[in-house]
Length: 105
Image (cartoon, rainbow, N blue to C red):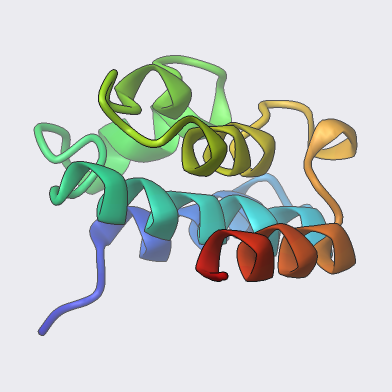
């Protein structure tokens, strides 16, 4: 099994922008993985690595728009909270752990 190109590219965006990785960027990457589970496909699968970096790094296509309409609303809400374009608006790790535990019960 190979890693999702997007989960590899998100940290690269941090390197290119010379911004350090943060808990918020980790939450974003986790949101990408959750989106893959919801869609059963890789987000932005139709783009190459450079195009993905442009989309993510420069505010292009929004991953939240790829959440399927039939996705459980509680799960979709967690994905949206992880993928917020503004790092300060993303769910914090302790709250994310709590939400994920609620979904699993």
